[in-house]
Length: 214
Ligand SMILES: O=C(O)CCC(=O)C(=O)O
Ligand SMILES: [Fe+2]
Image: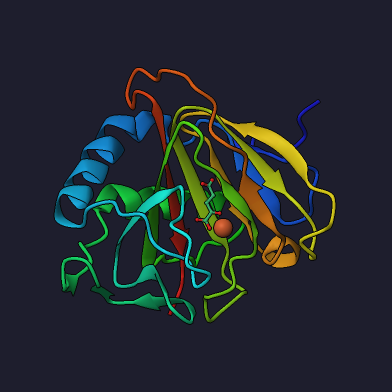
């Protein structure tokens, strides 16, 4: 019996991890607007393979929108209001992004969440993101809101050390994951994207990661 179905219709606790909420297909009704806005943002701030402080180009191509964007530099990672590629401010956060991220955060118990940063991750077949913590933000009381579009990814949640065992689950087109509280600093990552063809995004996956960075 789904005791809370009438209160939180889209929320399931698929990972059984405290502080993690999987909102299956939440983004689907806004799919067309989201994809059009992704295209608009990327036309103004193109995808690029950022280089880690260790000197490796990341397999995931990235861009940003919102007040702040996540960037790599020689000495580490940080947020900046300026796109080092275009030498301009990042594109404004589209309304469709702001509305969806607030809806997801509210369903997960963070009604005050307002993202000032959206990282756009584009995975092509074989691209991956190794286990890492999101810890370049100022305020860890604010959650991470992560939207999946396109090909299915295998997402991993680990523990609080990189070597902790991770559990894996699939993220489908339209799924949204929110993690905060006890889970905010869990290691997480994405396994190499498997070949496939998505009706809207072809041989790729787009992930939107919303954060309150500043
Ligand atoms: O692509 C994803 O689902 C996760 C992305 C991520 O963890 C990040 O950008 O920090
Ligand atoms: Fe992350």
